[in-house]
Image (cartoon, rainbow, N blue to C red; front, side, top):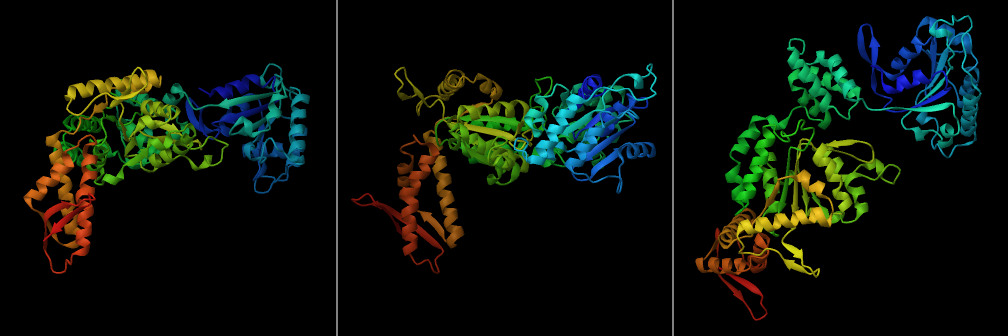
Length: 613
């Protein structure tokens, strides 16, 4: 039941004089206790093993307090004080590196009682491990020399038939965050120093911990054996990558909030993303989604397939069925959508509409223009610089944003323009729902909806490498969908050689159709209505258009639909909004309640003007 590094240390005590324990050292560890096990900090776990090997006490040093005996019990304190002439103040003795070096000199040959020296926070002993000053260098050279000169000993008077009668070193145990926090030559040049790694707990360890902390969950004791077994497995599965101390914190969180053991996945998510409740299970959200179809279709004209697919994703997310086909859904995002199609047909608008539906504010989504990440080094902006590089401690734009708003819609606009190496990062997001930035902090995407937009498939390269149109306005939707899907598959499979990305997106590709003339009329009417509303809000004046003016303006704005709804808006801006602004600027609106556009004129220089009444 003990962690692997403890077993290795116990096995190597007869042949190694010093140990470097690196990694997950601030965690809790399973430690035998009476007839079972308990969670204990590293020092307690270490002492439990060494005490069984006949060690009488530990000397624990850290750069702040100095040296202190462990455990803080009369016998251990008395022995340590006697053997090392300690002068304790409030249980500890302040000590410099030179003093610590002197203690190390005495340690290997001490035969009165078996003991060990633990150097805690050894990562903080020096500022730059490979650029030591004279004092630091002398200290580590002395420590290396002692590691080679030390010999295993048997305490005086020990019975050779007991564990105490077996030869063991009085070891020095260095506790570091990373092995490289100590000088690189220190462990490499000494055959008597072993580096042990305290890893994150495996499944069996997490399952055993689930039993230990289960009593903090409401209803655990009264649950059936089958229910407790299911809880145990779910808790162990959902905490992959977390420490045992995190599991204890999750149980404490559940205890405070009255979360039942049957809802352990909610407790884990609360801990990971920092929200006290799961918003996907709120009744108000289900009510919004139930009435979503008219809302989406009103905002995004002429794309019923996209609206239907989006609503399906939302309903699936609310019902907790994302990834239900897999044995374990893991931490996958709540939903993934890949919007493909011509420019200006509503891909980004649908993402905004979806955000408006969920949050009540279309600007609440997180948007990343992937054209800004066309170079490989731009991944440092998205995810944070690698450790050791300038700015690595600032984190990444994406990871920071998701930690701040875990319940969100994240839009990755024009995904095909990003560098392929950056796209690889999405493999981890789509599969595991998490990313770790340069600081080592993990951002969880399990409560987010990811939306990718792309223009892939509208234009392709022919056999001569020329860019040609693959689909055109007027093609039937089935033809557009088939060709665009085929082009997307070719892009990921052959051009990028990343079929695994496409595989993780799955069947969530939504192909948008070209804007048809009937849909263009609806889009034009909606934009014109927005203009009228804006004039009313800004100037308290009702703007009216004569029927011939409206008809002519609609013909001007919808004659070319190659740029979709955005093209209609651009044409409306140049043909109507700009001349309207000039006319209103020159018109005295004092006392007026209505302004009518009587005519739209264009002079020989193609400058459009409006006639107001």
